Image 1 (cartoon, helix red, strand yellow):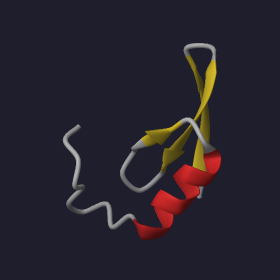
Image 2 (spheres, rainbow, N blue to C red; image 1 turned 30 degrees about the horizontal axis):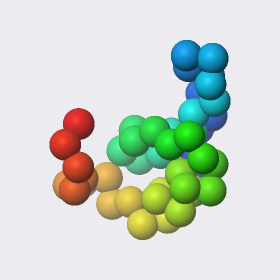
Image 3 (cartoon, helix red, strand yellow; image 1 turned 90 degrees about the vertical axis):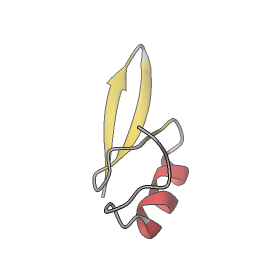
Image 4 (tube, one colour; image 1 turned 60 degrees about the vertical axis):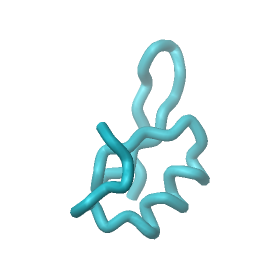
Length: 44
């Protein structure tokens, strides 16, 4: 489930598995479906 957050006068959607944030809910949901949260391919 994607978490909704208000930050910097904008709405963000956060992957609850890895914490990555998106400005578009559908992007966040699509990411979360494929997220393994164990070894992210991006640098935080």
